[in-house]
Image (cartoon, rainbow, N blue to C red; front, side):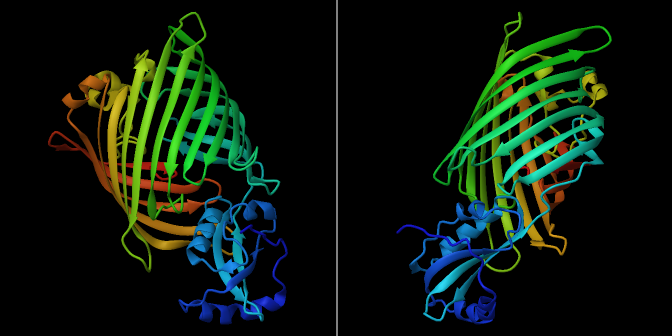
Length: 433
């Protein structure tokens, strides 16, 4: 049956039915015919942004499972601090399905503030962000930084630019910074365009093209690279809530190929695989979630020192102090550097403060996490099995935050070959997986 959604807000008299509707709805046999779907609270967000996430049809009996899934889809837009749904009974025996949203902070004035990155450390950032540009769930950011990272650039994205989940994202900018562990300064100019397409609600694809120039320099030499990079990704995603999944799986495959267009005529291809699974132990109360991930990175082509990866940051094996040039050139922890790797993580996530909106419209919440990581990294895939595993164990917190999703703090200790290290703190944006 076709779906018709009214854009009108429920008239004030309907609020008198809220208490009655709550009592009635608690009865499992209460399944009224839904005559319309309506929204409350979206003062900036245009109605059609919400309407296209609603799959519950009208003129059929209430399907609470579908209503919950619709609520989750609205939550996953990332522009609301809180989303709730309610059934409002009408005198004729039918009912209205009402979604009540509280809009999060969606823009910043032009402002300067300190920020931290594991690879570049502290910078002072000047930024103007609009996370719900024109009320159409578009994202626009213009900014720059000084300090550990000198940057300027612009980014734009729209998840429905060309229709049903056909997305466009664009990034252009310049970045100058010192390499995390090589005695090199980097100067990067890049232009990146990406198109995405969902097939149904679970299969998500994207293709992109990056054109980039990158130079590595020190007081003696300067190596320049100019290349184009086609990218492609395929995901199978059944998570319920993106920022803190309580069920579902996320399998992803991505290809990132760099092809030199300078006289060096070099190329390198990175193939990344990731497999995540989420399970909630309890059906009531504050959520206790088991999250498991395994990741694999293969690299083919020009595997020289400039393109080395390392273990010991917030996205790999936690609990190891970030490397610097002194550690790298000493060779004392050569087992942490390489081009190809495999690693896994297990996290036990306990909800302490459920995510909800404050009086200012910003979201508030808190998760406490116990984690363990393990992995191996090597220059060549054939040598992976010859490496001793690197371990990390610790605990952390997760705080939902407007526009960035979640702020993550982890403290962990590393272990390898019978030796524990002294531990370290990791800071990151977004869940590890």
